[in-house]
Length: 288
Image 1 (tube, rainbow, N blue to C red):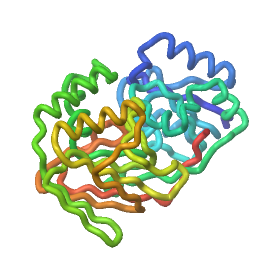
Image 2 (cartoon, one colour):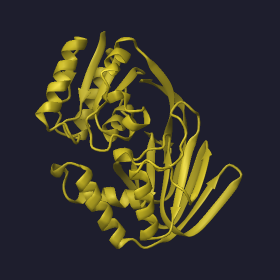
Image 3 (cartoon, one colour):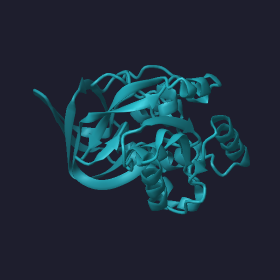
Protein backbone atom coordinates (compact mmCIF):
# COMPACT_ATOMS: atom_id res chain seq x y z
CA UNK A 1 0.00 0.00 0.00
CA UNK A 2 1.41 3.40 -1.04
CA UNK A 3 1.17 6.39 1.27
CA UNK A 4 1.08 8.86 -1.63
CA UNK A 5 0.84 8.71 -5.42
CA UNK A 6 0.70 11.35 -8.16
CA UNK A 7 -1.25 10.80 -11.38
CA UNK A 8 -0.73 13.46 -14.06
CA UNK A 9 -2.84 14.09 -17.13
CA UNK A 10 -0.35 14.81 -19.96
CA UNK A 11 -3.11 16.47 -22.01
CA UNK A 12 -3.74 19.18 -19.40
CA UNK A 13 -3.00 22.79 -20.32
CA UNK A 14 0.45 23.24 -18.76
CA UNK A 15 1.57 19.63 -18.71
CA UNK A 16 3.37 20.10 -22.02
CA UNK A 17 5.82 22.47 -20.33
CA UNK A 18 9.03 20.87 -19.09
CA UNK A 19 8.92 23.26 -16.11
CA UNK A 20 5.64 21.72 -14.96
CA UNK A 21 7.01 18.21 -15.29
CA UNK A 22 10.12 19.13 -13.33
CA UNK A 23 7.92 20.40 -10.49
CA UNK A 24 6.03 17.11 -10.44
CA UNK A 25 9.24 15.07 -10.42
CA UNK A 26 10.54 17.18 -7.53
CA UNK A 27 7.31 16.68 -5.58
CA UNK A 28 7.40 12.93 -6.18
CA UNK A 29 10.92 12.83 -4.71
CA UNK A 30 9.87 14.95 -1.72
CA UNK A 31 6.96 12.62 -0.99
CA UNK A 32 8.91 9.50 -1.98
CA UNK A 33 6.02 8.44 -4.19
CA UNK A 34 5.51 7.36 -7.82
CA UNK A 35 4.64 9.83 -10.59
CA UNK A 36 2.29 8.12 -13.02
CA UNK A 37 0.13 8.97 -16.01
CA UNK A 38 2.58 10.97 -18.13
CA UNK A 39 2.58 8.18 -20.71
CA UNK A 40 -1.23 8.08 -21.02
CA UNK A 41 -2.30 8.69 -24.62
CA UNK A 42 -6.05 9.03 -24.12
CA UNK A 43 -8.71 9.90 -21.56
CA UNK A 44 -9.50 6.19 -21.26
CA UNK A 45 -5.90 5.38 -20.32
CA UNK A 46 -5.90 8.20 -17.75
CA UNK A 47 -9.11 6.84 -16.22
CA UNK A 48 -7.69 3.31 -16.01
CA UNK A 49 -4.50 4.65 -14.41
CA UNK A 50 -6.50 6.51 -11.74
CA UNK A 51 -8.69 3.46 -11.06
CA UNK A 52 -5.68 1.17 -10.67
CA UNK A 53 -3.64 3.53 -8.46
CA UNK A 54 -6.63 4.38 -6.22
CA UNK A 55 -6.72 0.73 -5.16
CA UNK A 56 -3.26 0.94 -3.60
CA UNK A 57 -2.69 4.40 -2.14
CA UNK A 58 -3.96 6.47 0.76
CA UNK A 59 -3.56 9.95 -0.77
CA UNK A 60 -3.90 10.44 -4.53
CA UNK A 61 -2.70 13.73 -6.02
CA UNK A 62 -4.17 14.67 -9.40
CA UNK A 63 -2.03 16.92 -11.61
CA UNK A 64 -3.95 18.65 -14.37
CA UNK A 65 -6.95 20.92 -14.74
CA UNK A 66 -10.54 20.93 -13.51
CA UNK A 67 -11.49 18.39 -16.18
CA UNK A 68 -8.64 16.08 -15.13
CA UNK A 69 -9.79 16.27 -11.51
CA UNK A 70 -13.38 15.48 -12.52
CA UNK A 71 -12.23 12.50 -14.61
CA UNK A 72 -10.27 11.23 -11.61
CA UNK A 73 -13.26 11.61 -9.27
CA UNK A 74 -15.38 9.63 -11.73
CA UNK A 75 -12.73 6.90 -12.10
CA UNK A 76 -11.85 6.08 -8.48
CA UNK A 77 -12.04 2.39 -7.65
CA UNK A 78 -11.82 2.96 -3.88
CA UNK A 79 -12.41 5.95 -1.62
CA UNK A 80 -9.14 7.83 -1.08
CA UNK A 81 -8.10 11.32 -0.04
CA UNK A 82 -7.53 13.48 -3.12
CA UNK A 83 -5.31 16.48 -3.73
CA UNK A 84 -5.37 18.89 -6.68
CA UNK A 85 -2.15 19.99 -8.38
CA UNK A 86 -3.31 22.79 -10.73
CA UNK A 87 -1.54 22.37 -14.06
CA UNK A 88 -4.51 22.92 -16.36
CA UNK A 89 -5.71 26.10 -18.00
CA UNK A 90 -8.63 27.48 -16.00
CA UNK A 91 -8.06 25.78 -12.61
CA UNK A 92 -11.34 26.99 -11.09
CA UNK A 93 -10.94 24.58 -8.15
CA UNK A 94 -7.62 26.21 -7.28
CA UNK A 95 -9.36 29.57 -6.95
CA UNK A 96 -12.18 28.01 -4.90
CA UNK A 97 -9.57 26.69 -2.47
CA UNK A 98 -8.05 30.15 -2.11
CA UNK A 99 -5.14 29.21 -4.39
CA UNK A 100 -3.66 27.10 -1.59
CA UNK A 101 -2.77 24.46 -4.17
CA UNK A 102 -0.21 26.85 -5.66
CA UNK A 103 1.52 27.71 -2.37
CA UNK A 104 4.53 26.07 -0.67
CA UNK A 105 2.28 25.41 2.34
CA UNK A 106 0.34 22.93 0.24
CA UNK A 107 3.09 20.32 0.65
CA UNK A 108 2.74 20.66 4.42
CA UNK A 109 -1.01 20.18 4.05
CA UNK A 110 -0.30 16.93 2.19
CA UNK A 111 2.18 15.69 4.79
CA UNK A 112 -0.17 16.57 7.66
CA UNK A 113 -3.16 15.04 5.83
CA UNK A 114 -5.06 18.31 6.22
CA UNK A 115 -8.31 17.80 4.35
CA UNK A 116 -11.88 19.01 4.14
CA UNK A 117 -14.95 16.96 3.34
CA UNK A 118 -16.93 18.24 0.37
CA UNK A 119 -20.12 17.02 -1.32
CA UNK A 120 -20.09 16.49 -5.06
CA UNK A 121 -22.70 17.41 -7.64
CA UNK A 122 -24.36 14.74 -9.75
CA UNK A 123 -25.08 15.82 -13.35
CA UNK A 124 -27.84 14.04 -15.26
CA UNK A 125 -27.85 11.29 -12.68
CA UNK A 126 -24.42 9.88 -13.45
CA UNK A 127 -21.46 12.28 -13.69
CA UNK A 128 -19.89 13.73 -10.55
CA UNK A 129 -18.79 17.32 -10.90
CA UNK A 130 -18.05 20.56 -9.06
CA UNK A 131 -19.20 23.03 -11.73
CA UNK A 132 -21.44 22.77 -14.80
CA UNK A 133 -23.00 25.09 -17.35
CA UNK A 134 -25.73 25.00 -19.98
CA UNK A 135 -25.67 27.70 -22.63
CA UNK A 136 -23.02 30.16 -23.79
CA UNK A 137 -20.14 28.76 -21.70
CA UNK A 138 -20.75 25.22 -22.96
CA UNK A 139 -20.95 26.47 -26.55
CA UNK A 140 -17.59 28.23 -26.08
CA UNK A 141 -16.04 24.95 -24.88
CA UNK A 142 -17.52 23.17 -27.89
CA UNK A 143 -15.93 25.65 -30.27
CA UNK A 144 -12.56 25.25 -28.57
CA UNK A 145 -12.86 21.46 -28.94
CA UNK A 146 -13.69 21.82 -32.63
CA UNK A 147 -10.25 23.35 -33.20
CA UNK A 148 -8.70 19.98 -32.37
CA UNK A 149 -7.47 18.31 -29.17
CA UNK A 150 -3.84 18.74 -30.22
CA UNK A 151 -4.13 22.51 -29.65
CA UNK A 152 -4.82 22.15 -25.96
CA UNK A 153 -6.81 24.78 -24.07
CA UNK A 154 -5.56 28.11 -22.83
CA UNK A 155 -7.00 31.52 -22.06
CA UNK A 156 -6.66 32.76 -25.66
CA UNK A 157 -8.28 29.61 -27.06
CA UNK A 158 -11.20 29.94 -24.69
CA UNK A 159 -11.50 33.68 -25.35
CA UNK A 160 -11.71 33.07 -29.09
CA UNK A 161 -14.25 30.30 -28.56
CA UNK A 162 -16.34 32.60 -26.40
CA UNK A 163 -16.27 35.39 -29.02
CA UNK A 164 -17.36 32.91 -31.69
CA UNK A 165 -20.14 31.63 -29.45
CA UNK A 166 -21.28 35.19 -28.72
CA UNK A 167 -21.34 36.09 -32.41
CA UNK A 168 -23.59 33.13 -33.18
CA UNK A 169 -25.70 33.36 -30.03
CA UNK A 170 -29.47 33.50 -30.32
CA UNK A 171 -31.37 33.90 -27.01
CA UNK A 172 -33.56 30.92 -26.26
CA UNK A 173 -35.97 29.72 -23.64
CA UNK A 174 -35.29 27.78 -20.47
CA UNK A 175 -37.35 26.56 -17.53
CA UNK A 176 -35.77 25.97 -14.14
CA UNK A 177 -37.50 23.85 -11.52
CA UNK A 178 -36.35 23.38 -7.96
CA UNK A 179 -37.85 22.62 -4.58
CA UNK A 180 -41.03 24.67 -4.40
CA UNK A 181 -40.49 27.08 -7.28
CA UNK A 182 -40.31 27.34 -11.09
CA UNK A 183 -38.78 30.06 -13.26
CA UNK A 184 -39.10 30.59 -17.02
CA UNK A 185 -37.42 32.99 -19.45
CA UNK A 186 -37.15 33.38 -23.21
CA UNK A 187 -33.75 35.12 -23.02
CA UNK A 188 -31.49 32.41 -21.60
CA UNK A 189 -27.81 33.25 -22.07
CA UNK A 190 -26.22 30.75 -19.71
CA UNK A 191 -27.07 28.83 -16.56
CA UNK A 192 -24.26 27.78 -14.23
CA UNK A 193 -24.73 25.30 -11.39
CA UNK A 194 -21.78 24.79 -9.09
CA UNK A 195 -20.34 23.86 -5.73
CA UNK A 196 -18.12 26.96 -5.69
CA UNK A 197 -18.29 30.53 -7.07
CA UNK A 198 -15.57 30.36 -9.73
CA UNK A 199 -15.38 29.63 -13.42
CA UNK A 200 -12.00 29.03 -15.05
CA UNK A 201 -9.22 31.64 -14.94
CA UNK A 202 -10.53 33.06 -11.67
CA UNK A 203 -13.74 34.47 -13.15
CA UNK A 204 -16.26 34.85 -10.33
CA UNK A 205 -19.67 33.84 -11.62
CA UNK A 206 -21.78 33.74 -8.47
CA UNK A 207 -21.82 34.53 -4.81
CA UNK A 208 -21.60 30.81 -4.52
CA UNK A 209 -21.50 28.53 -1.53
CA UNK A 210 -18.41 27.23 0.22
CA UNK A 211 -17.08 23.85 -0.84
CA UNK A 212 -18.01 22.01 2.40
CA UNK A 213 -21.62 23.27 2.43
CA UNK A 214 -24.29 20.77 1.28
CA UNK A 215 -25.75 23.26 -1.20
CA UNK A 216 -25.56 24.00 -4.91
CA UNK A 217 -25.46 27.52 -6.34
CA UNK A 218 -27.36 28.37 -9.52
CA UNK A 219 -26.84 31.55 -11.54
CA UNK A 220 -29.01 32.19 -14.57
CA UNK A 221 -27.85 34.98 -16.88
CA UNK A 222 -30.47 36.43 -19.22
CA UNK A 223 -30.02 38.81 -22.13
CA UNK A 224 -27.71 39.21 -25.07
CA UNK A 225 -24.13 40.09 -25.88
CA UNK A 226 -24.01 43.19 -23.67
CA UNK A 227 -25.07 41.20 -20.63
CA UNK A 228 -22.38 38.60 -21.38
CA UNK A 229 -19.74 41.35 -21.67
CA UNK A 230 -20.78 42.84 -18.31
CA UNK A 231 -20.68 39.42 -16.66
CA UNK A 232 -17.19 38.72 -18.00
CA UNK A 233 -15.94 42.16 -16.96
CA UNK A 234 -17.26 41.72 -13.40
CA UNK A 235 -15.76 38.23 -13.23
CA UNK A 236 -12.35 39.36 -14.49
CA UNK A 237 -12.28 42.11 -11.86
CA UNK A 238 -13.23 39.64 -9.13
CA UNK A 239 -16.48 41.51 -8.49
CA UNK A 240 -19.61 39.78 -7.36
CA UNK A 241 -21.99 39.48 -10.32
CA UNK A 242 -25.22 41.42 -10.11
CA UNK A 243 -28.50 40.88 -11.87
CA UNK A 244 -29.95 37.65 -13.16
CA UNK A 245 -31.39 34.87 -11.07
CA UNK A 246 -29.37 33.46 -8.18
CA UNK A 247 -30.58 30.61 -6.00
CA UNK A 248 -29.13 27.95 -3.75
CA UNK A 249 -30.61 24.52 -3.24
CA UNK A 250 -29.98 20.80 -3.21
CA UNK A 251 -31.28 20.05 -6.72
CA UNK A 252 -32.21 21.87 -9.94
CA UNK A 253 -33.85 20.67 -13.14
CA UNK A 254 -33.37 22.65 -16.40
CA UNK A 255 -35.53 22.22 -19.52
CA UNK A 256 -34.80 23.87 -22.90
CA UNK A 257 -37.12 23.84 -25.96
CA UNK A 258 -34.12 23.17 -28.24
CA UNK A 259 -30.95 21.16 -27.68
CA UNK A 260 -28.23 22.85 -25.66
CA UNK A 261 -24.73 21.70 -24.73
CA UNK A 262 -23.68 20.78 -21.22
CA UNK A 263 -20.14 21.35 -19.95
CA UNK A 264 -18.84 19.99 -16.66
CA UNK A 265 -15.64 21.35 -15.15
CA UNK A 266 -14.61 22.78 -18.51
CA UNK A 267 -15.17 19.58 -20.52
CA UNK A 268 -17.96 19.18 -23.07
CA UNK A 269 -20.26 16.35 -21.99
CA UNK A 270 -23.40 16.08 -24.13
CA UNK A 271 -26.25 17.89 -25.87
CA UNK A 272 -29.82 17.62 -24.69
CA UNK A 273 -33.02 19.38 -23.71
CA UNK A 274 -33.23 18.34 -20.05
CA UNK A 275 -30.51 18.56 -17.42
CA UNK A 276 -30.64 17.59 -13.76
CA UNK A 277 -28.25 18.61 -11.01
CA UNK A 278 -28.33 17.34 -7.45
CA UNK A 279 -26.07 16.82 -4.48
CA UNK A 280 -24.36 13.46 -4.45
CA UNK A 281 -24.74 11.65 -1.10
CA UNK A 282 -21.05 10.69 -1.11
CA UNK A 283 -18.57 13.25 0.22
CA UNK A 284 -14.99 13.62 -0.97
CA UNK A 285 -11.91 14.12 1.20
CA UNK A 286 -9.88 16.90 -0.41
CA UNK A 287 -6.44 18.12 0.72
CA UNK A 288 -6.75 21.77 1.73
